[in-house]
Length: 173
Image (cartoon, rainbow, N blue to C red; front, side, top):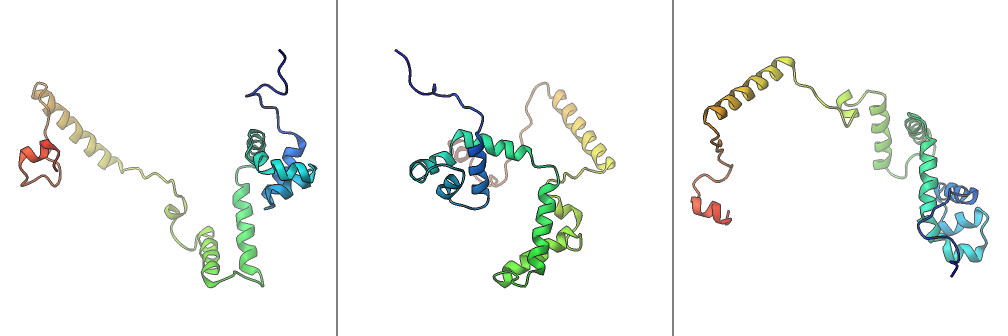
């Protein structure tokens, strides 16, 4: 017996209409309006727009769109938006929002906070002298452990002082 429609699990490349719908969604339109603007009928959009917005094809279209974003492009756009919000006559809706734009601009310009505060994933490296001290101490510990012929080193856990050993092992603490 022949199967009807597409086999389940098979995903085609996103169509031009899917890309147009994605553009509408990125502009802030509702799923229904983006679907209609992409060329689907109103009746079809009413029934399937929200399902299409969450479909695998839409996810693939989003990934293709993301691959087209060049490194640094989002930062440049953000700078333009911050500048536009700072110089706009309408300004921010409230003082707190305006202060956020001012702080962001100052941080981007390097006038507020240090470079370590701007880069969220900065990894600090220990000075060579400290690194050497830690390595030497670790070697001492390992040598002492070997001298004990396999005996384990016991370290008291914080907060267990003054507690009975039976309480600790029973799991009551």
